[in-house]
Length: 392
Image (cartoon, rainbow, N blue to C red; front, side):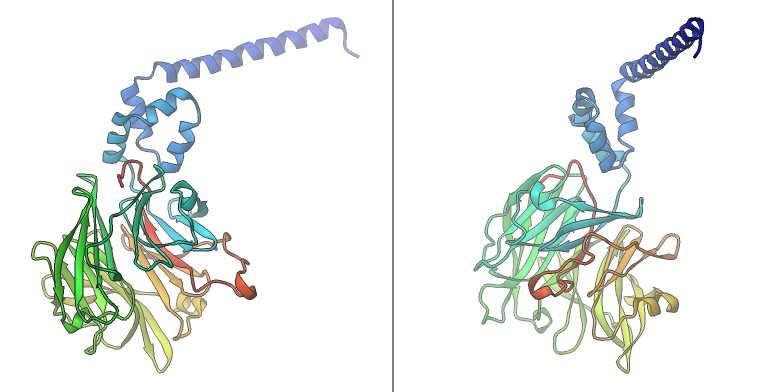
C-alpha cells in the first residue's frame, strides 16, 4: 500500500485535472456564449437538416436561434441542397436514403403530418413538400405537407375533376409558393380531359382548359415533371408513346413533336435534373432487356440524345426480367434506378459520370404482409429535398 504522502499527491493531481477540465469547458462555453448571433447563424446555416434538428436539442438558446425568422431566412438562401430518395410503402411507412451519408433512415412522415397511412397515397414531391391523395373515397382529396415543420393542408375540392389522370407539382423557392396541376375527368364515361391548377398564392383551383384530343387519353395515373416553366408527361395513345407539355400561359397541353428513341422502349420515365429534361427506360429485344438508358431532350433540335446506359456488369447483377418494371427518379445531378420487385438500386451521378450501388434498405427486408406474401409491388420511389421553410 502507498504512503499517505503518495495518496495526497495523487489526490492533488486529480483535483488539478478536474480544475483544468472545468476551465477548458468554461472557456469553450464562453466562446459559444460570446459568439455573435449573426456569425453563429451563418455557421448553423451550412448544416444539413438532420444536424440542425440535433442542435436544437442542445439548449434553449440554440433552439431559439435555430427556430428564429432571421436564421430560417438565411438557411433558405445558403443551405446545402440535400437530396434524399424516398422508398414508400403504404403499410410499412417511409424510408429515406441520403446520398451524402450513403445511409438509410426511417422517416416518420405520417406521424409528423398526422396522416393515416391506410387512407392516403404519396403521389408527388417538390421543394420539401409532399403531396398525398386520399384512398378509398368517392372523389380524391389532395393533402400537402412538410414533414420537417409538421405542417399539412387539405386542399379545397377541385372544380370539375373527379378522377385524376395526370398530376404534377412545382415549387417556387423565391416566393415560397407552389402549384399543383391535375388533368382528369369529371366522369368515368367521358372522353373529355379537364386540366386544373392549384395556386398556393390564391388558395384556389383555376381552370386550364378541356380537350378531347386523342393524345390526352391516359390508361393510368401519370406523374408530370416541372422543367423550365412547363409541366411535361408521357402518354401512350393509339399512335404510341408521346411527350406532352402543358403551357402555363396558354393554359393548354401541347403534343411535343419529338420522335421517341428507337427500339422497344419500356418503363419510360421523365426526369427533370438541373434544368435538363431526361428520359430513362429499358430497351427490350426478343423478350430480353438489352439495356437501360438515359436520354436528354435537345431543346433546340427537338431530338432525344443518349447520355449514358447502365454498364453491362451492373445490368447482369440487377437481373432484370423483361416483364418486371424498373423505376427511375432524379434530383439535382443524381438519378436512381430500382427494380419494381426487390430493393436492388443503383445510382448515377451525372456530374461525376459514375455508377454506384445503393446499400440495401434493411427497413423493409423480410417484412411480410397479407398471406405471407412480400409486399414489394407497393414500393414507390421518389426524390425529396427536406426543407425548413417550405410553406403548405
